[in-house]
Length: 375
Ligand code: CAA
Image 1 (tube, rainbow, N blue to C red):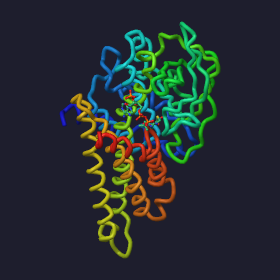
Image 2 (spheres, rainbow, N blue to C red):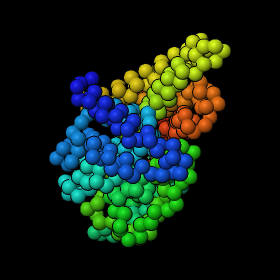
Image 3 (cartoon, helix red, strand yellow):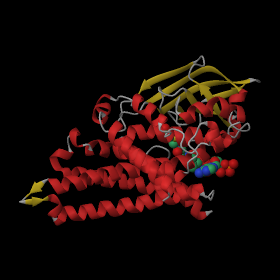
Image 4 (tube, helix red, strand yellow):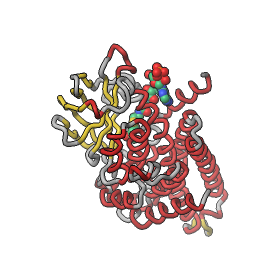
């Protein structure tokens, strides 16, 4: 790691401890979005880390991004999913595939974190089967008429700018899909109900409804019919962010468990002096190290502009399982204390689950990996 990497890691670690830790339990309990904290993360440059400075970004590499994601996720996975979506699904796609006008108008405020963005692919009947888009973007000459519903959208209400994937020419299947930039104020766009979730309860997850929303043609990303490839390419990178999030949840739970096992006494000695606990810690640390190496490998390949599709899917597949396993063991090590909110690990166990579901389920990651292997 370079000096710069270490500085980013330390800044994220300090921020998580001083600004995210206080109140994280309350935000989880009351499903409160960390709005003030996200503003401070924006001021530190965490919302557009990899974007070129000429578009208000941090100009950092993917390694810096995963280091920061891990540190933020150790403490507050609700804040880190907001960060991950804004960085990898919104800013990255806009910078890579957007027009110069789109970058000036939308990427700049998104990269600085002045506003946040949302990525809208999932629908009531199109989750893993993402080509089955029912949302329609009818071509009306100079604009598209957008109609449909999106589900489980991260930053659903707190975002101002939405990238919406919609079907224009159903007969062309995935080649008839477009990616459109939609502003919250556009008439006909309504933010639906907030989801009451098992985990990442501080994040802001909503359904969205579009009724005859006029979206200018200038807001289409890429050529006509490019929307599905846009979504898939963006998700390839997004999966590195979620893998880093899963890694952070796991390493956060591990660090708490290590500390607790040195403090808590049972049968006349600390938990850490019992071999049963030592073996758990050994397994947790080994899994976390392996996950971290996969996450760093995927980030490194992306930075080297090499093919990272398989590596990103492997990192997410593995790290999300590690997050499951490690957080479950963390609760076990904490015993009764682990089952109550005050000790954090029960929240981490609930937060870990979503990393096996969003940005491609575990099963989708296996599809992606095996397709790459058999190509
Ligand atoms: N990268 C780039 N392009 C890809 C790709 C990838 N990983 N996977 C597929 N494509 C392209 C294919 O090349 C093909 O294009 P061409 O015909 O031009 O070659 C096109 O996409 C269709 O591919 P398939 O025929 O393979 O499509 P499929 O229907 O069999 O399967 C899938 C595709 C991989 C299963 C895909 O639907 C998928 O990834 N599903 C999961 C969707 C997902 O991750 N959703 C998460 C929601 S977003 C979210 O969670 C954000 C949040 O808020 C946190």
